[in-house]
Amino acid sequence: MPTTATPRSPDPRPARTQAAIIDAVERLSARGEEVTVPAIVAEAGVSRSTFYTQFRDFDALAVRILTEVFAEIEALDLRLRAAATPIETARATTSQLVAEFAKRRTLYAGVLGSRTTTEAHRAVRAAFADQALGTMQLTVPEGLDPKVAADYVAGGTLAVLTAWLLSDAPEPIERVQQQLLALLPTWLINEDKDPTS
Image (cartoon, rainbow, N blue to C red):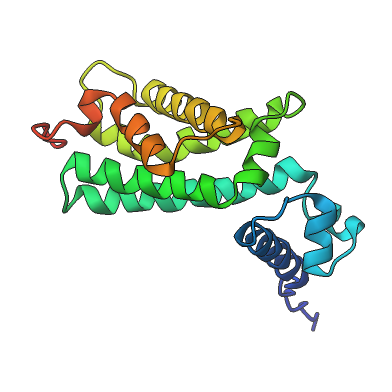
């Protein structure tokens, strides 16, 4: 009788190494230190080759972190829309987004502000738009393509945040939040709109 091979469990080491690298970014950011590959590998206690085995490059790390952040913000948005007004929802999600960019300022400035990282910028914008799509599908007026709206909101928001990250005299976080809220389309934050109609 032939024997069947027992399926192998996935190797947990890559996930642990990636978590250690992301935790190192968190600690460096919390201390206000510059986030670079040498600083990350020293903080995580891994080699450069191990870093590059897990992440193709520095940009891929930032895209990975931001993709997860955008997913968390979209989940918050969809939860709040069931219980809060659209403007309250927009305030909460904008606040979380700006706080994230402030927390890891050097990481995101290095990726979004570099002329050599247009691929990463496109990947971040695409990840943002993908996560915003659920909200757009609930809120866009008839005749407006939710995907186009998601691309528009993601692109505009990232343009404001990138300019803020790269500013020599950055505005306070609260001012950036106010600016982003003021720039949102009225149909997205309109108190009177019933998303089910």
